[in-house]
Amino acid sequence: MKNTLLIFTLILTSNLMIAQKTMTPELLWQVERLSVMGLDSEGTTLFFTVKTPNIEDNSYDSKYFKMPVDGGTIVEIKKEDVKATDKNVSTDGNHELFNTEVQIEAIKGTDVYKNLDKSDVYIFSDLDIRHWDTWSDGSFNHLFYKKVGSEDATGIDIMPNEPYHTPQKPFGGDEDYIWSPDSKAIYYVSKKLKGKAYATSTNTDIYKYNLDSKTTENITEDNKGYDTNPAFSSTGALAWLQMKTDGYESDKNDIIVLNNNIKQNLTQQWDGTVRSFTWSNDGNHVYFTAPVDGTIQLFKVNYPGKKRIAPVVEQLSKGQFDVTSIIAQKDNTLLVTRTDMNHAADIFSFNLKKKSFTQLTNINKDLYNSVDLPKVEKRYVTTTDGKQMLVWVILPPNFDATKKYPTLLYAQGGPQSPLSQFYSYRWNFQLMASQGYIVVAPNRRGMPGHGVKWNADISKDWGGQVIDDYLSAIDAIAKEPYVDNDRLGAIGASFGGYSVFYLAGIHNNRFKTFISHDGVFDTRSMYGTTEELFFVNHDFGGDYWDTTNEAAQKAYNEFNPVNKVAEWNTPMLIIQGGKDYRVPIEQGLAAYQTAQLLGLKSKLLYFPEENHWVLNPQNALVWQHEFFKWLKETL
Image (cartoon, rainbow, N blue to C red; front, side, top):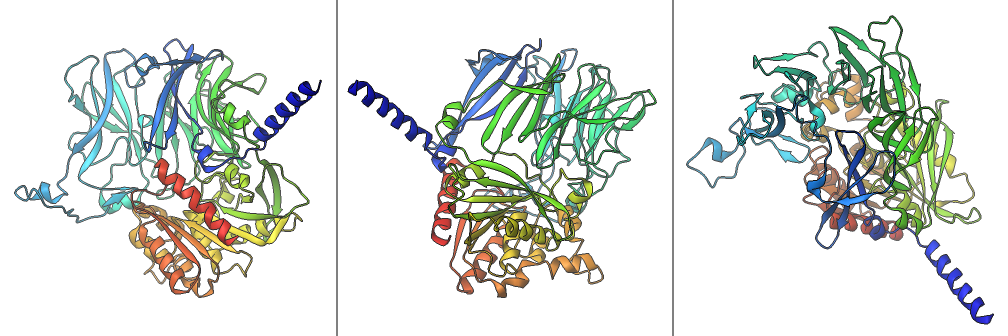
C-alpha cells in the first residue's frame, strides 16, 4: 500500500511540475508553423507544410503532410508527393504561369560603365530608390507563360520592357495573377507608375492580357486606389478587392464584382473593411474575413448578379480568435486557419449550417499542453471623448488577484493594423504574460474592426486622441488592485515605437521603462528617408516645408517626438533593423543618441541584416532575451 501511495505521489508531483511549466523564448521558438498548400484536383485531400525553426543551423526545417478535407489521419509525405492543384496552370491545361526578375534599367555602375566591372555604386535620378529592405537595381518582377511541359525556360513575357512589378513588391505572390476561365487571358496586378509617382501612389490596377492578340487592357482604370486579389467565380464573374483613395493604404477595402460589363460593390454599405475573400462554389456568395471587435471573423455577402436585390453582409462566426485565412469550400463547410493569443495557426472546418468549428489539426498540442496558458480577458474602457474602447488584458498563468504584477502597455503598429487574436513570434503576449507581466493591449483609434471612422481617425492625428486612448487604457486597468502602479512599462514597434517615443515626453511619470522597436522618432526625418511616401503624405498630411498646411505642421511640430525629448526622464531600450527602409535607421540611432546625451539609462539593440521585423531565428532569440533582460533591470 505504501509503495502504491508513493508511486501515486510521484506521478501527481510529476504532473504538477509539467503543468507548472511556462512559455519561454526557447519554447516559443520550438512552436511549429503551419502553412496550407491547397487541395488536390478532386477536392478531397488537403496538403500543408509545417516549418520548425532550427536554432543551431539558424534556419527552418520543413515537413509536408496530407489529410482528408473532412478530417482524419494526417500523413507525412515527401515534397514531390504534394498534389495540390496548381493555379498557375490554365484551365485547359495547355499553359502555365511563372514569374522571374528581368533587368530593365541600368542603375548599377557596372551596368552603366561596362569597363568598370569592380565599381560598387547606384546611380539614381528619380525616386523609388529602395523599398522595404532592398535597393532598386533596375530589375523588375515580370510574369511569363509557356506551354506545359515545354523545355523552353524563357517563356513569353507579358510585360516586355516594362519597368513595373508583377508580383508586386515587396509582398506580392501568386494572388497577383490568375487565368481567365476560358484560358485565353491572364489577369494580373501591377502598379504601372515610375519614380516619384510610384513612391507617392497606391494606384495598383488589374490588367487583362490577351494571349492571341498579345494586347493588354486596364480593367480598373477608373479607380485610383488599390485594386488587388482578382478571382473568378465558377460562373465566370470576376471579383477583386478595391480601395478608393489614392495614397491611403488603409482605406476601406471593398469587394467589387464585374460580370457582363456590370460592376457591383458588394460591401459598399457595410461599415467594415475586407481582409481576404473566396467565392462560394456555386458563385452565389462571397465568403470573406474581416476584423471586428478585436478579432477577425468569417462573413458572407450575396452576389445578386442581374437580380434587383441589394447585397447583404452577414457575420458567420463569433468568438475570441482570428480566422486567418479561408482555404476552400467543401460542401457545407469552409476550411480555414485560425489563431488566438495562446495558439499558433491550425486548420479548422466551419459548418455553414451549424455555424460551428471543428479543429482538424493540432500540431503544437503537446507543447501547449506542457505549459500553463495565460488568461485573455476582454475589457471596455471609456475614452476621453466618451467612446467605448476594447482593451485586451492578458494575465499571467496561475494568476493570483491578491498579488501585484508589473504591467506593460502594448502599443500596436500599423498604425491601422488590427490588434486582434493574432499569434506573433516576437510580440507574443503569451510569452510576456508567462514571464510574470500583465499586458494591456488597447484597440485605440486607428484599429480596423470598429467602423470605418474609428479606423480613419488616427490619420493626421498621431499625437492626439490615440495618445489619450493609450493613457485611458492604462489608467483604467491600473486601478485594479493587482496592478503594481510603481512598475508600469510601455512597449511597441513601428507606430507603436513612435507611441513609446511620444509617451516618453508626456507621460507624467506613469511609466518606469520604455521599449521602442523601429519607431518613428523624428517625423521630419521620417518624411525625408522613408520609401513609401504615400504613407507619410496621407498620415502626416503632406510636406514639412509647406507652412500653409495646418495638418502637416502639426505632425512635424506638436506631434513630433523629437520636440519633446527635453521631458524624457525614463530608461529606454531602442531596437533598430539596419535594413528597415520603412522606418529607416536614422530614427533609432537618433533616439538612442538623444537618450545617451540626456544621461538616461538606455540601450541600443541593432540588427544590421534585419528589416522592419526580426526573422532570423538566432537574432529573434537574442531579441527576446534582451527584451526581458531590460524589463528585469528596469521594471
